[in-house]
Amino acid sequence: MDDCVFCKIIKGELPSKKYYEDDLMIVIADINPKAAKHYLAIPKKHYRLFTEMTPEDAENLGKCIAKVGELAPSLGLENGYRLIVNQGEDGVQTVPHVHLHLLGGENLRLRRVALDD
Ligand code: AMP
Ligand code: ZN
Image 1 (tube, rainbow, N blue to C red):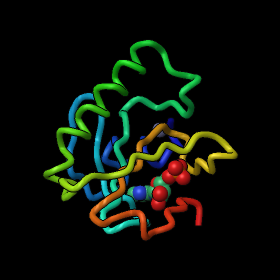
Image 2: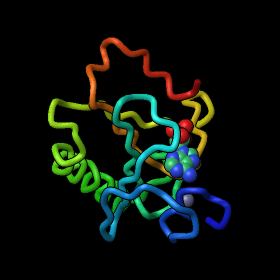
Image 3: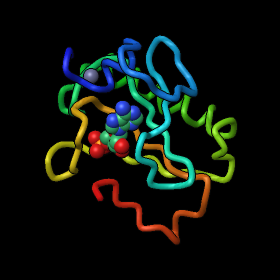
Image 4: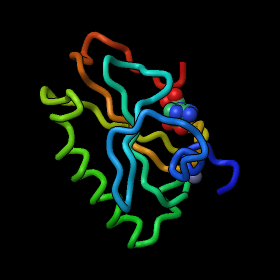
């Protein structure tokens, strides 16, 4: 998608702080962090909603989640983390390209994590 900020980051047309990349996904720092550590795991294929996923997209998203688990210690998330996916208008999804928020680096019990403030 030409006007999608995450597609531009994936294509290298916009800068990002990139922590990981493979054929299926990238992991970058969120530009507006809501916890001590806040990453975005972004599948390379552009689609907005889970309802748009093909079976292959679903399989690939599963691989992305497994990779997130594998990468977590090297991202400073060895103590645990929270995954959040915002979907659609009521979910206040601001970038229409499926992505996983990966939050941690502190105990989130003490923090009200509202991604839309
Ligand atoms: P969502 O509201 O779930 O669609 O989340 C979009 C996230 O992308 C927000 O947490 C933004 O801070 C983040 N974001 C937007 N633009 C950039 C960018 N250029 N680089 C890194 N993160 C971004
Ligand atoms: Zn996109």
